[in-house]
Image (tube, rainbow, N blue to C red):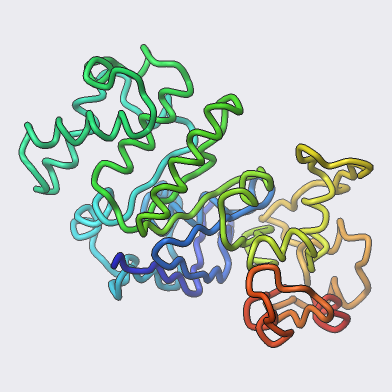
Length: 340
């Protein structure tokens, strides 16, 4: 069985000339084999930086200030760069958001899909090419034997995105991180990509999906983690989290988006803008935008606490009581915890 990914207390900082910005602050989660976790939140909430920290792909101005990221018991954050190269791409893969920038325009798909198979010593060139062609076919690229000889700029946006997924899949990693994998593709291709990820999940691959699209998250993922200003504000099973969000920010995200079939529901944008992390608000970072905020919210930091969810119906485990909900739901809002 594939190993799980356990991230605990992850903190990432970016150094500026006169200050240090904490862009990921005490983030913890676990992704089991065959499980999909959605990480949602507005742009700048720390979603991609958190995952790039796990992959050890930060720019020079960034550094991991604390925490652990264990894959099968091995702390990825404690490895040397040389050791991490042996893990990256083989045991944990990543689908980047912008396929045109992530793919090398001067190299054919064959070169890019077979290179790390050979570098990791998984197989020789002939077998690597066979696997690359097979994987391109798996992601729905027509005539993969022909397409493998093409360059990225010769492909449509949807095909480039599929090629990115194929590159991450070809080594059959234990964990796959997908950063906005359905961006800039039409709904037909979007569904095909989600079905492909669902098939990987069914094979036992743990998947982390970074997304703004709550509909995509609901369709594909088991759990959701909501981030704001670098911190986790809510975490739990996605169907319960979206049916009854506990944190005001999660409620705001839900109310500011529309899904197919949603009727008689007003579109309510979240007022204001995400905070500048150089001037992070005191207390709960969301309190300047929160319609339920009180004086205490601007004074005290709100840690993640079990959410009792009084009266909540467990949609995933029939017959599970409030104790089960409390174990699986966490929210960083004292009002939600007190009032359920």
